[in-house]
Image (cartoon, rainbow over all chains, first blue to last red; front, side):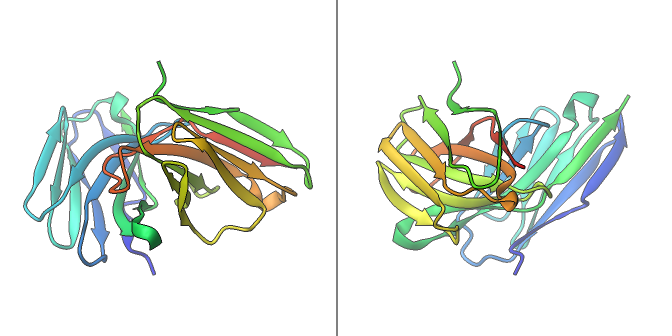
Length: 113
Length: 113
């Protein structure tokens, strides 16, 4: 059962063309929703953590928002250097009080000049 | 000064061989993880350790054995490698078991031929 679903799988934007990426989740008792950026050949890089519905966080051209069922990553006036795969993840509880990130499949964003 | 470093970055080996991947973090974190990213770029948790103690052990073949000599190091040993083990393996660390933001290494691309 998918607990984190991201859409679209791929998105192509022109430089300056704002858009949003979606992450819907089905876990109960959310302990945190995370956004990461992954460049080709590199590990995921942390962007944001959101904990409760209504929370928003911003970093440069990126703004993440959270509702009770989904999160959006808004990209305002993107530049080619924003091209990357954006990963959404939720915290899942495992045995022995351990938590790990449960990732969606990502949205591959390409911003063209 | 890399926060989470893995070696090697690339590993090509024949079926049936045994290989190890090493990971070190200099962030002073208590918790470390191994994630596997398959050919479809899907990231999944394999193991986590907290202060050298195994916390999470997902459904992973017994051929995979993590070892944590101290809390700054988490190695992954794989016996009798199979074609299906080909993937990118990421090490990550977080401050503690609550697993707030996780920092990822650059990944080890394992190719089994």
